[in-house]
Image (cartoon, rainbow, N blue to C red; front, side, top):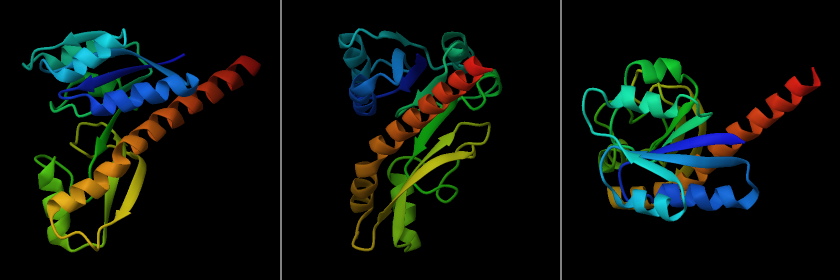
Length: 195
C-alpha cells in the first residue's frame, strides 16, 4: 500500500477531503498526521484512527519531521505553515508535495502565501489564476511542477473573489496528484515483479 503522511497546521479541511478520497478505492493510505502546532485537524485525524503528533516549531523541526516520515512513500503538505529545510528535503527528494494557490512560477516564493498571493494576482490583471501542486525543494515554491488547475478570473473584482475561485479547485488538484503518484508506484511495482 502506498503510504502517505500529511502535515497540517489548521482546521484540516484538506486532510478531511484526502481521507474521504482514500476510502473510495484504497489506492493509498494516510497513516500519519503531523502538525507544527496544536490544531483542529489533529482531532479529526484521531477520530479516523490515524496516528498524530505535534512537533514543536524550533530549529530541529525539519530533522524531527524526517525521523517521522523517512519510511513513507509520500509526504503531503496540506496547509502546513512551517518552511521545511535541510536533510528532510534532500533525503525525501521527490517524495514531498505542496499545493500553492497560484499558477507557479508566478506569484510564488518567500512571503507569498494566503491572501497575499490572490492580491498580487488581482493586481496583475491576468485573466486566469489557479493552483499548482509541486514537489518541495530548497527553493520556496521552486520545486518541479506536478500538476496545475486553471480558473478564469475576469469577473473577479476583489482578492476574496479570486481566492474563492481558486479554493474551489485546490483540494481536487491535491487529491489528483496523490492518486497519480500512487498509481505510478503501483505500475512500477507491477513491472518490477514481472522482471
